[in-house]
Length: 286
Figure 1 (cartoon, rainbow, N blue to C red):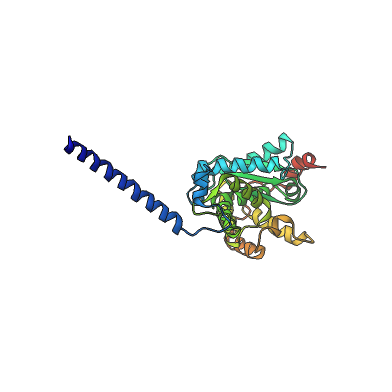
Figure 2: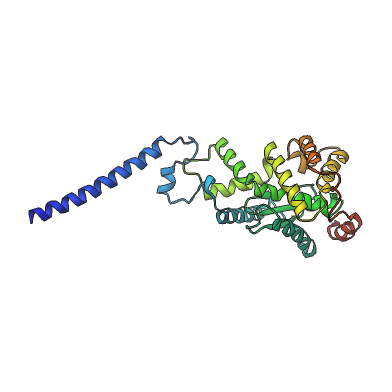
């Protein structure tokens, strides 16, 4: 009996020691991992049962789900007013889906929405959500120019630029813990970044190049991306929101000129200005 008891004690002692060592290692990792003082600690989040988002390990499904929540918050908080015209929305969606299928990230579901806003602007949030202002649709000359803007925004999604921007902003604002961001903070920050913070120079240049390749693969004339940007700078007394929130515009135009072959610049769809204006102008006229 005593031998059986001794064996039982040795077994559970070893198990207990193993658990103790594991707990000590976990505590050491938590205590020695640098954390921003303003952020909530990893242990606090764990004890409160808050779901934590690891910015460096987002799957496509997670990104799409979080993008859906950011989109819902943008609508609920009145940051975005959707334009209620089925014909215009179907038109923009058809262009967007044509591009998305030929993008470098075709596997996620893209959502294209028209925003009732006179400013010349377009933007993207993570998870395939892209927004185009009616003011921009009035300014572009043809379908290819509109497609070039949408292709640029798809380029941001392909490059995961929103996630990287969120990571840097969370660090700057002291919101990022060793574990990541809790879901509520993640969504709130996503709403904030959708409008207020421009992308980096590197992100814009990359989105231009990804968008240009996407535009060509989808069969649109590549010259449209260049003419749209040049026109906005030339004819605007002050830079429109689309350009003022996108830094290093001159560098971007220079890079686009170098990337577009003059021999094939006008080859492709979407350059018929009359057709575009006959279709779009009456629908978005105020």
